Image 1: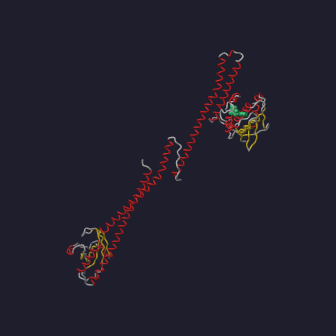
Image 2: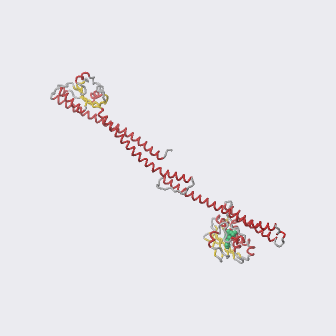
Image 3: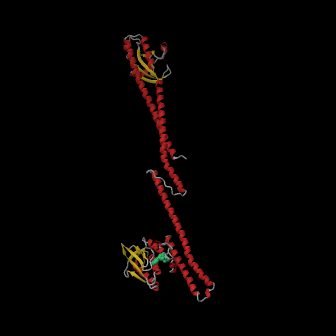
Length: 482
Ligand code: ADP
């Protein structure tokens, strides 16, 4: 696998190499040009020095061998090749060739520097010498012949100097070597820096991939350190947020799973009690009690009572599972809640009469319009009234109230019964939660009544609240939109 680190380092190195190569090439060419130009300028100066020297010696009528000796010494001292040429191109003097061979030298009239000097006064050229087989720089000067008529070189027309290219080329080689060495140094420095930079960039990514590996394996407890505010830092932050969310979701799922299995356990337990009793009474009857006129009717009645309990329990269970699965559809419209309370009071009149309880409605007359599902609210209020009747003693007072409060309508079911102890209040809306199990069963409770009320009230975007005091009574309230 090509890592990010190696990719970044390699890219840096390639770019650096390219830059160094281009720069080196450019520099080498520039330096060579510079030296060549400087050398040619120097050679040009050299021709005028020799010219001045020759004129002086001609004025002094110096003999030819003096002049030649001087020229030779000068040539040797400065590694210069000095050539004197006449108008026709014949070589008069040549410092690198013995005097005896000068007569056999080629005619120089067509040498490029001589041709150019003839036309412009100065001629320059770089080439391999035919006489010395060496790469040379040549500069030739066309001079005024008149002052030389009576001198040792009466036909002198061109002064030419040349220098071996080798002189320069070893300098250029040295400079090239320096450029290559500097290039390697820069390459090394940039290579090391890019390694460090690449490591810094890739380190958090390596960490992130290790954490993601952990997440894949189900370990959500590791946190990524967020050390920067750049894209990588943001990614680390996002991954941390994601694992937090996943953890919360998994927690929630586990909780729901626990609640579900708890509920299933409760349901089985609740169903067992009435079925067990029902079976018991039926067995006793079958074993002979059916023929005993003193007990048979009461046993059948008891069996019927437990069957009814079973029926009530299943009805509530079906109801609550419909509500919780979202299957129950609400239908909201405006209706008169005061009228609903009056209807409920008369529906429960028989039961209150049995226990000599009294229901009061506030207000007794007039209408209070609210927005809600009338049938669902009838069911919720029915459960509350049913509880009040069940848990209050004979002669108790029950009050059903509807009244405006903060732009809404508050509905309350209040009784002056036994009340509920504080410690139980937060839990009475849970499914199957009862303050006193035996008492609840005795009066035919399923333990689901208040859970259903809570669901219905919440489906109206409201909340059910309870106020209760031991010995004084209990009040359940909720608000409805008007
Ligand atoms: P249940 O079917 O047992 O009545 P609910 O969910 O309706 O179940 O009520 C839960 C518990 O709250 C009851 O078991 C009872 O102990 C208590 N409770 C409810 N309403 C009243 C009330 N008006 N007065 C006293 N206790 C009440």
